[in-house]
Length: 275
Length: 293
Image (tube, rainbow over all chains, first blue to last red; front, side):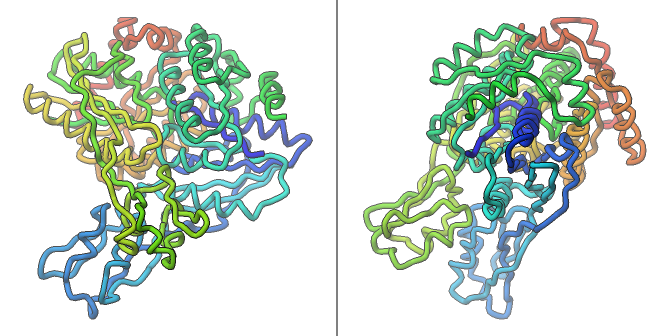
């Protein structure tokens, strides 16, 4: 069973729920927690897990053989990321951060003047605590394509089998790194809060889950800070429903701030749905 | 004209709320244009009470690859492994493209020019509206399942620049998305000053450090605002120590207060909902202005 925790809006409690759920499940089951918020991974901090780097994430970057290059400029022309600079009469060169490693330049070069070099765009890390194995990615600051790191972590984690549950924690938003994280999940839990902003972003996530054909449920965090009616109605419209509510509590906020997984009865409600 | 960008790394620490209030205070003295660059999940409009934008333009910033009838001719080419984004798989022996994963780089088309076409896709909408507070806000929305949020941010910013020029604005205020990836990088580019928001939690500090590395990469001056500094004063001290050690200025500290949530629910910036906060935001702006001069 592969379960995604997402939400659209940032700071609604995705990582809080992902870690709390993993923690609770791990008391009787083996849990693989994937931190796929590679922009800003935090699950290790919340669970107090010491992680170590196991692998660099690398993409292809073109290396030019200027002895073979005839300065035709085709490589620059096919690069949709504008990562290859070409000025007539000069040799082309690459702007590292902008290259996404698609290899289009290499394919188009009829002189074989481009070979594949590697560029580091991030790291994969791993850590363990009790029955939880945490695997996550960390994108190198300055790199743009988070989804490449997400995919690398997913691929790397495939060798970790025999887990009862895989919990996937995603980034905020709805774009490529979130889509990549959600693909392959059996169930989506969208964490939100009853504010107009939470409502607005929840709709985007429910739409995305529908598009990906994944069953979605709503977890309402800070459920008592405003009227939850708007969230209930929205969930119903998308054939989803609120399956757990966590009221605002200073205790929870304090634990979170101290870097501890929360324990709350609502986590049991989530587990019931999973079972 | 100066551009101030608000970001945080971690989501939900108060970027949009703080952007809204800073804008209100700034607009009392200057001509401004506000831009919501969180095109994944744009919320800033809501905070000014705007539910629908005007002058909506459909934009296409990205391409996607589509197979056509002649794709059969490419059966012998290994398209699956050429795609760096794992968007191509085989159905029987015929390559199929997963639109959700395709980044439109065109590598597959170079190998199979006959069977694959690259088409521009309408991936976002950009609109603008004059707020009831007198200034314009420009906002974009990425279509669900589409990619290219970084490019859409560029389009949104360009629209804001045009308006700013027309009205001869003093400031453009940019609200970035969470994270450190392409939309955030596109938000930071061409900024004159960055306001980095954080809160006293280990996650927020860790994410702040990561996003600041990106800001430093662009060599843009910045300052930190600690939001809800009083929910964990000990950790707030830790952030202040981090700042001091790295010679970063703390340009503001905001308390945890119920008014912030109440303002949110009322679709009003907190300085409008409760005037007592005006001074705190004014102080932040004075600090920003000090660095811009």
